[in-house]
Amino acid sequence: YEMIKEGVVAIFLNPVDWKEVEPALIACKEAGIPVFNIDTEVYNTDYVVSVIASDNYNAGVQIAKDMMSKLPKADIVILDQPIINSINNRIKGFIDTISGNSNYRVVVQRAAGGELEVAMEVMNEILELGFSFDVVMGGNDPTAIGAIAALESRHMDKKILIYGVDGSPDGKMMIKEGYLEGTSAQRPVTIGRTAAQVAYDYLNGKTVDKNIIIPVTLITKDNLDDFTIDGWQ
Image 1 (spheres, one colour):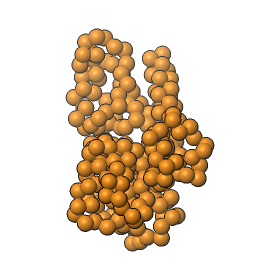
Image 2 (cartoon, helix red, strand yellow):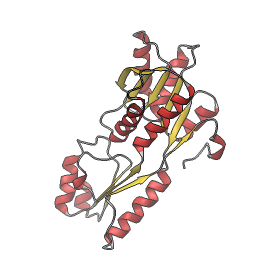
Image 3 (cartoon, one colour):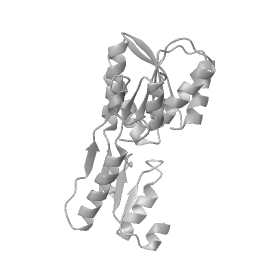
Image 4 (cartoon, one colour):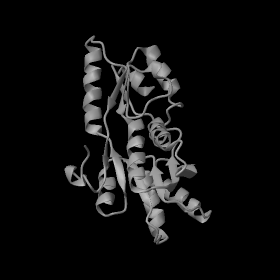
């Protein structure tokens, strides 16, 4: 609302809560300020000009396929965050890919805040409840790293395949050190550049696409050398 008062000509939005942000979107619409939605989609896209985001559904598909190529069967823990739609889409892609195959079973699915500390607490609770599992699907890299921290603190001997999504420097370092099995890499630099160009085009009277999807790439130890560990794609 302060930005509206200041007379901004456009807003780039990455929502923390894809539904609760709607009153602000309505206010922008009424003020005639175009909103460009980046990274994670809002609930009602009628209020934004364009959505520029990673192919989050495919990120989940990539992880599920990698898991299935490495394990003939698995019990799976999913750590999600329902208020963040990008994570919802990743989890949906994962679940849709294993759907119908009884060898792959989700034994527990919990919200983990999308944050390392919260994920660590949630994973500790899951371990205390005695769940047995072979795989952890984290909604993003901080979630996956939180799960790793919980497992390491308990000195778990069993090999657990842990996956994240982001392709963050921390995630890639965890792959290098052998803790993280894979991370489906986003391209935030490309997202930012694309969003800026879309905004310039729109403000100059050009027609722009409603949905712009940026591809993702699964990073594992097999292709880690193709990426810069201490930077983003």
